[in-house]
Image 1 (cartoon, one colour):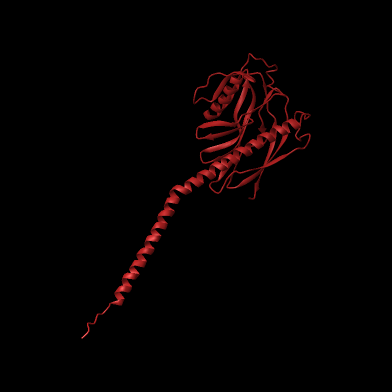
Image 2 (cartoon, one colour):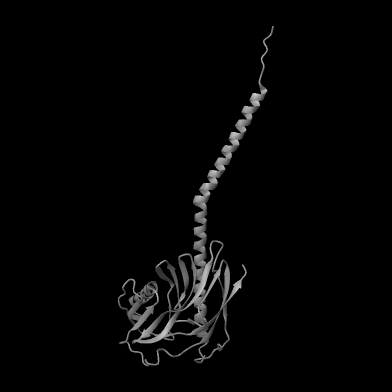
Length: 276
């Protein structure tokens, strides 16, 4: 009589099913690990790169603004003191990338963040137009483009000496301080409202190389920024012949001897939202 073998097909099906489930779980685990590695290593790198590109775009736009202000200033050579409408009715418009998908930027206009005096007499105040994202700030101050990270700042583009006018041009903005947040772009219009020919305060009529300029800032990092500018210029010996020493943490830069004078044209400014 032949032997009869009984095969438990249901058992084979169970083992096969378990193998499929285990394999599927392992595939999901590998995918999860890949996603986790990308989230830890890839995403922060992409965000850092995006923020870096955004900051470069903002620096370039502030440079465009600096160029626009000087073009307006030089295009209105016949403008009288106190005139409120530019002789040529010129206006420049540009788009500022204030914020991005990675963060909201704060565009601020701050009046009187510092001031210049000559021979102890006040001459002009300094305004600042800047964008702050996190601990970084990029903006235009005293005609130069700067960047600040925490308490450390440097010039991206130095303030402007006009050799034809024998002056350090310090643009000022009409109107009160403002602060606007945006995660996109803002349209900025600027125009010249006043081009003063007065070089010093009424108490100081004649420029003398024996009298020193002083810059007084509201914040220590700003004083250090301006000291950096005058120190670098003094090494060139073109416009600045000497600058006094600066102590870290102080808000005053004194002993600035310039061959050039200071002029502070006034500009109007208008902001409007810009759709991306």
